[in-house]
Length: 402
Length: 98
Image (cartoon, helix red, strand yellow):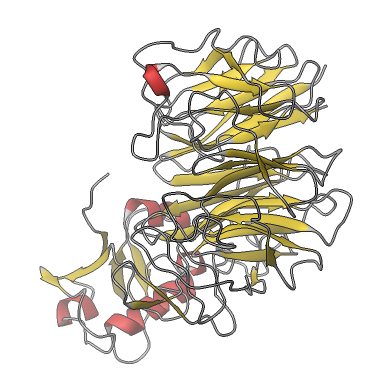
């Protein structure tokens, strides 16, 4: 019988939750990398025991960790006993080296002053669909790095997210000088979403907070914004601007790579032509603000969001934690509440903290800033708290193991 | 022999317990001690100083003999007690919220 493994990143360590295919009883691991912010952990689709993890700290910066045995043991890449040439067995120090190349330039802060582009942390790791040694990293300040040697070294990919205009307001910034989209200097300027097209190896979608969605069709050499149809009524001087939209998450079903679903700062949207045009599908949601969005593993038109009250109040409306499901690819939504707290609940669900498994029926999982990880083994009809008292959850990734 | 005390998380990362001891060739300065530390424990590269600029990370502090040397330039000579190994050079995670 298949097993399920959840990789959970939190503010104070990573946890691995495992269950059999029934997904009723779960084992919760001891904390990995206790005390560190674990932004994201993700396994290779071709080798699920190969797991990459982003370990960060405001004190000591970025660390990359890799496991080759499903999360039992970890090394900074390049440091396994086979890889170490020296006799002392000391870990190497290149796997956390994220250096911007080329003319990086500067960008404007909220106060109008120029600040140099600066690496802060890896938000998201997206392993290749075909090669376990190749991974893309989405980082803050917005850029993409790529490794082709299992994380041992990382190379900055072309950053030419093209300029479309120039504006400044209190929240969102755009720097036309160096042709790089930038954003909110407090929480933004981050490549947080990377989606690899399963049918076209040269096509990658990314999303940058306070900048928007972008697509490459040449394997990452050039990028162009794909934000037509997005509206920012309050955040931008021009609501229809080509760049500057605060996209929170994009999701795709692997059977239909031209169809994308988006949870934006406000609004849930859909495109049927790879981002050329987006249409709002918020419909009857109680709030169309939120962070994660995901697609059912077997029903490409069934999508899930977690409505949040507003940009100013990052918790569910009315203190009720509700996942909303649409079986029609948007517009018509139903609240899923069974097993979720329906009063006094004021947690948030962050953009990388929702995931689906590919068992029958489809399992869905999400983690909260209150430290709960909720799971449903029936497509969202009923929910259970797998664990209740973890540190604030930053990310959840589900893996199915044979 | 220079004695260096690392914060908890960096001891784990470098896979050491307690103090580390370093040989520093030539002048014992803030910069040369950190160079020797990173050379002996490469996993610490980027965690104390930036990979490229070699500037101290904002939430890391350098103490020695009850003095705060965090703002001193890299060519600053360390006190004699540190050079002789009587006192350790302290790398400290700054106290910050959270």
